[in-house]
Image (cartoon, rainbow, N blue to C red):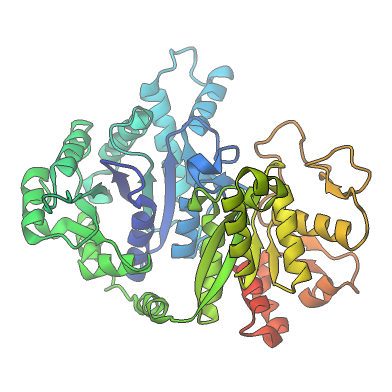
Amino acid sequence: MKYVLVTGGVVSGLGKGVTASSVGVVLKACGLRVTSIKIDPYLNRDAGTMSPFEHGEVFVLDDGGEVDLDLGNYERFLDVTLTKDNNITTGKIYQSVLEKERIGDYLGKTVQVVPHVTDAIKNWIESVSVIPVDGKEGPADVCVIELGGTVGDIESMPFIEALRQLLFSVGQDNFCLIHVSLIPVLGVVGEQKTKPTQHSVRELRALGLTPHLLACRSAQPLLETTKEKLSQFCHVPVGNILNIHDVPNIWHVPLLLRNQNAHNSILKQLNLSKATPPDLQEWTKRAENFDSLTNSVRIAMVGKYVGLTDSYLSVVKALLHACIACSLKPSVDWIAASDLEDDSAVLTPEAHATAWKTLRNAACVLVPGGFGDRGVKGMILAAKYARENNVPYLGICLGMQISVIEFARSVLGMERANSEEFDTQTPDRVVMFMPEGSTTHMGSTMRLGSRRTLFQTPDCITAKLYVIELFSPCSLKNITKNFHGLQNTITHQCFLLLFFL
C-alpha cells in the first residue's frame, strides 16, 4: 500500500480536504485506485453530536456513520463509498484502547500513548486502507490520509507520532507527505510572506516528518522568487512547491495540480512507474461549463444554522449539481428561520422585514435539517408561504416534518398538529419518534444511512413514481425515466437535488 499524507499549517480552514480530494482525483486519473482516510483529533467518538456552528455539517455515510464533512468531498470527488471506519477520531482510538485494557489484551502492562495508542492508530490505518471503496475487488493502490487541524496542536501529537512510525515501517518509497500552508500578503507591503510556512515546516520536521511537497494557498499565483525562497528554507525542491491559489470553483483545483505536474512528483516519491498521464477531460469540461453559466435561479434556504454555510455543505453541493444539470447557476439566499417569526417583527424589525423580502423574491424554498424547536415557527411560515403562493418547496429531514405540520394545521384543520420532537403532549402527533430511536441519547440513535424502503400501498403517488415495490438509493438511476416530463423545471431540479443527496 502507498500512502499520501496531507497535513496543514499556520491556520485551519485552508482547504486540506479539497486538496486531499484533488490529489486523489489526479492519481485516479493516472489509472490508480484510490481510497481515503480522514483523521479528526477530537475526543468525540464521531461528529454526530457536534454543533454545526462549530464544526460545520455532519456528513452521513451509507453505513449510517456520522462523520466530518471532508468525507463528503472525498465521495463526491473520487466516486467512492466510504465507511465510518474511514474517519478516525481520538475518541474512537481511546475507546478501542480502553476496551482492550479492560479485557486484558495488554497483559497487565501500563497502558501509554506510546506505544499503545500509536499502535492502535497505525493498525486502524493499515486495516482500513486495504478495504475496497470503489466497488471493485482487492485493495486500492494509494490511500490518501488527511490529518485534521494544524501542525503543533496538542490534540494531534499522538497521530503525528503514529504517522512518523508508519513512515518508518512502510519505507520512504511508500509514503509521500504533502504539507498545505498559507502564503499571506500584507496589504500595506504587498509582498508574499513565507515566514509562517517556514515556521510550520520547521515544527513538522522537529516532530520527525519532512514534507516532500508543499501546497501553498494564496489569493494570487505565487511568484518564482517566493517559490525559490520556500525551497531554500523548507528543503523542498522548487518543482515540488505547488500553488493552489483562489479559483472560481473547486473543480479547478485538480486541474491546477495537474498543470503543475503534481502527479509526477507524487508518483516519483512513491516509486510508481505503471501510472499513465492523467486524463481530466471531464473535469475540465465540468469546470468550464460552470464558469460559462449566465442564468441563475434564486433559492431561499430557510435554516437554523445559516451563520456558518458549511453547516449545509452537502445541500449546497447538491443544489449546485442540480442547477448545472439545468444550465443554471444557484444563487442561495440564506434566511434565519427565527427572523420570519412574528416575535422578530417586534424585537428585530429590520431583520424581519429583510427576511420576508428575501423569501418573496426567491424562485423556490428549501428547508434543510436541524434539531430542536428554535426557529420552527419561522420554518412553518415559510412552508405556508410556499404552499399558498405555488412556490416549489423542498423539505429535507426537519424540513419534511415542517411541511407535514403546516399542511395538517392549515389544510386539515388540526390546529395543534405537531411533531413529537417539539411537543410530546400534543393530541395531534403527525410526526412521531421511531420505535428504534432514543429520546435520551443523541449520538448514533437516528435512522441513518442507505436503507431499503418497502412501499406497502402500491396505489399511492410515491409508489407509482418509484415503480418498484422495494426501493434502495442505488435504484435511483433506474427511476429517472419517470421524470422526463419534468425536464428544465424547478421540480426537476428538486428531484436532482434528492438524487445527489
